[in-house]
Length: 159
Image (tube, rainbow, N blue to C red):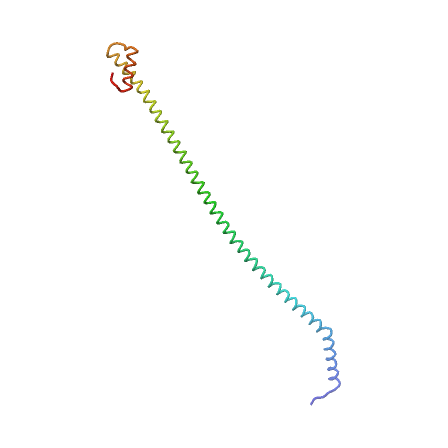
C-alpha cells in the first residue's frame, strides 16, 4: 500500500519550505506588481474615459461654433449682396441719368446746328435769289431793295 519513508517526508518538508519561501519572496511581489498594474490600468481607463468625454464636449462646441460661423457668413453674404444690388441699382440709375443728359444735350446740339444750318441756307438762298432777280431785271438791285427782298424771303411774306 502506501509506504512512508524518509525520502517522502524529506520531499514533503522541501515542498513546504519551498512554498513558504516562494510565498514570502515571490508571490507577494508578483501579487503587489499585479495589483499595481491593475490599478494603473484602471486609472488609465478612467483618464481615457475623461479624455473621450472632453473630446465629445469639444467636438460639440466646435460644431456649434461652426454652425454659428455658417450663419454669420450667410448673414454677411446676404448683406453684401443687398449692398451690391443697391450699389448696382444706383450706378444704373446714375448711368441712365447721364445717358439721358448726354442724349438731351446731343439732341439740343443737333437742333441748334440744324437751325444754324437752316439760317445759313436761307441766307445763301436769299443771296442767290437776289442775284438771279438782278440778272432777270437787268439791273443791280440797291442795298435797300436787297434788304427788303431778303426780309420778305426770310419771313416767308411776298414782297
